[in-house]
Amino acid sequence: MVDINFTLVVQLLLFLGFLWVMDRWVLRPLLKTMDMREHTVNDDKEQAQEAQDVAESLEQEYAASLASAHQKAHKKTAESLREVQDDHVAHRSTLREKQEKEVALTREEAQTLVEQQRSDFPDLSKTIARDMMRQLGLGGDVS
Image (cartoon, rainbow, N blue to C red; front, side, top):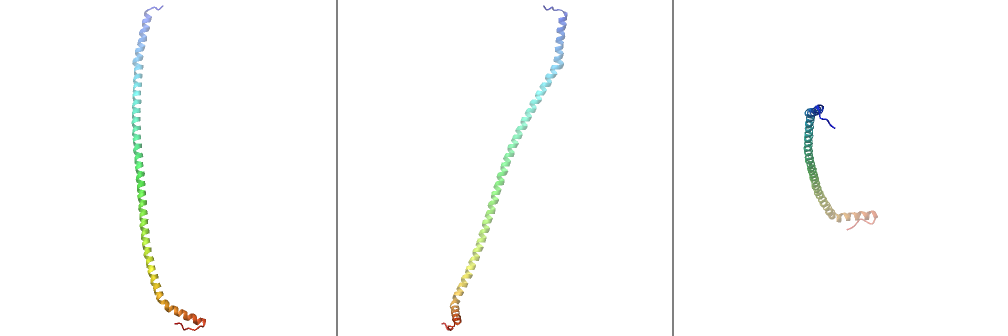
């Protein structure tokens, strides 16, 4: 059986004193430190989430800006290509007109030369026939 005596009371008081000291000097500072650490970790997590959100929004803005730049570059390239093609077509048309004028001029000159030679042909043919007959020894009188 258990005897309740002075030693048991002293031991109980010492045990309660030990618990009070441990609570006051060890457990409360330890719990306070753990709460502060948990609060700091939560704050850091919130800041990290905010930074992640900002980074994602910046990434989306960058992607949109990059896509816009690609579209502008493609559009500008297409416009430049169209301008070059239009210039090329205009240059070809100019050259074609110039060549057609030269061809028309050459045809007119050729037509004039043909007309001139046609008018000279009767006299020339008589001269050729006379010379051929002389060379063949047939006489030289052709009318």
